[in-house]
Amino acid sequence: MKNRISIRKATADDAESIAEFNIAMAMETEQKKLERDGIEPGVKALFDHPEYGFYLVAESGDEIIGSLMVTKEWSDWRNGLFWWIQSVYVIPEFRRRGVYRAMYEKVKQLADQAETVCGFRLYVEKENTVAQQTYLSLGMKETHYKMFEEIT
Image (tube, rainbow, N blue to C red; front, side, top):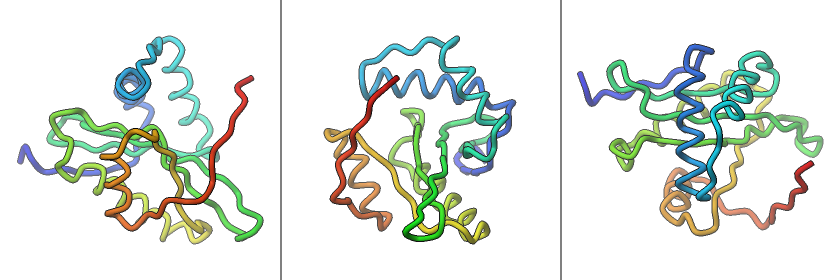
């Protein structure tokens, strides 16, 4: 069945596809060119360090059509983990067809099994109103936080 979408935890065998998605996402969202030899080791490193997080992939038939990464942040205020949803990518021909929704539902299912998860967070480009509407429709709420960073 070609249109059936399934979601599973990614394995190291999926690293090449995930790296390709990250390269495409960086170009689409930030017009930033990522080099494969820079991004692929970072993708593979997460499989070597599952304590940092994990990837999910969405498939239709034998084709990987989307992925997302979950990283973990300890909250001393809540005595639990926030799961940060990052590096979300769905190939263009499968967008607006429930792929992200299915991946998000899988994240929630896995969190329910983990017992230590106190919530989910993600960041989104200010101009990406389509993604923002998707997140709101799934029950997420915009926070009052702004994000700051220093890259070293």
